[in-house]
Length: 142
Image 1 (cartoon, helix red, strand yellow):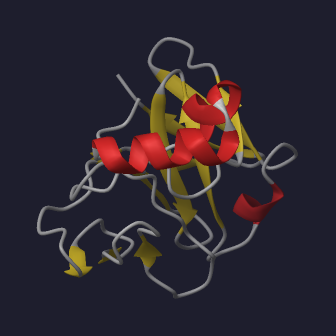
Image 2: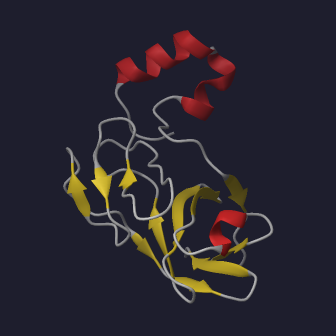
């Protein structure tokens, strides 16, 4: 579970019940999908994640327990970043285009390089190597 306040955790539990608690408490943004890494790499196909087929598109994915935001920055480049806000551990969101990556919990924003732009977060998001192929983006996670 992500790092969050006890109060937020308990309030979320009261609202949605214990069964869904682990999926949403202190989580922030929704997850676009799950990928199982192979040999330390996660392959995000354009068929599974169509937003990544165009420049400016991005997704938030769970890669074997590591939350990542993956953004297609140009025709041949992409970036992989931790999707865990450096302020209090909420899951960040990305709406596409030139908008910043944002944390719905406390309002921190980050650019596509992971640099903190505003809000209570001061540290950058962790970077992961990402490579654009003909039908996918491969992110090295370990």
